[in-house]
Length: 573
Ligand SMILES: [Fe+2]
Image (cartoon, rainbow, N blue to C red):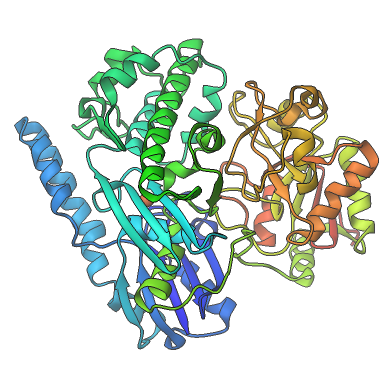
């Protein structure tokens, strides 16, 4: 039985299940080459069907990550704001009708659209609540039979936080927090205030900045803006957000009164900006822990599953075990809205069709398109680049030596990652022992802000050595403090605040990647590589052609695709 899941607005994506097992999941941005693609995921659906070798007629159910008719609360909130002034009312009404025409109405005829586009099909169509989709995306793929579930984002239909209790195949919703009280919108507003693009996932930049600042404004924010007003609850002062809906602006007057002048995109970053980031990060974390403590009291379980865009806040995630009673955490790599495609499909399988859980745990993120060696070779030859083939074992040894010599390597292997992180299938790799590697990468590849850290991929066996305890962290979604005595070994991947956001690489899950890091350890004594995503200002590369285009646009030393080492040398005629 096949279930297709869809995310159709921002971060659009498709996922396909066969008898409850994942066949494929992918984000549309990787095909369209537009970051955070907005719109129907045509190419993603086509890819999922191709991966399974089926047509739409074989699909039994289609699940959609949003219920378009749940508008009541949103309209009420919008009207409440809009009634404060005619200009505001007009702005809201205009924006509201755009959204209804652009997004909500098309959702109602989504079943017709799928049939029309993909040539028929007898599937049943299901609309699944947005936060329930988030909850399903993590709980049903977790190792837990029972877990507390918290989903937090900007907003779904109207919910911004969902508290739930997962048991077996059921997800019992305990409580919602609704608009306008949104931790995600609060964080996005500050991202925008600091001169970044809140629609481009720039929240990571604020997280990176937080490590350089002091939370000097925390007390005022916690007292006046994000107020914890009772167990498991908070209120957001809505004047902190911009309700005139000015283009490219999300922060309101309250933000400028509190923080001073906003930063323009090209302005220098100064200490005041770092302090704003640190203060906002702290208020985000304290509020999150406050919600989690209530959730623990309600559920009594020490297992926690999280999803929603705010679950990508890796700094907060790393502190949950120390700050709350939860001990065992699970995240799915696409915690943001793309994950709704997978979650809605899983929800239909378990909750609507009452299928038993089959013990599937998501241990890796490699659910996207993969390419054969012949396809990789053809792409390199089409670009007239010289190619050398190395056998397994030789390949890893050879590349480890080049990395230890300071080379930067584009590493293109197997199926593409699901979720915003490159996890050793579409990555640039480098030597983490070199303190100057950050500047080298910024010079040769990515023009990115100097305050942002790079992350390490390390052998799972090395967790204790660097963090003092073993962790399960396959998805780079959690930040941990690095042991003081180990920081000097890997300076290029330790942030200014002494933390790192590791991918712990399991030998059985990613054998080739594990072998490469192991060979690097054999040469250098350090079981760690610097890993950053294979892209420059674009979505992460998907095809061999994307990889070659990006390789040629950078000064990366080698490109490795499957067993092929591609250099900048041109082919002899
Ligand atoms: Fe969401």
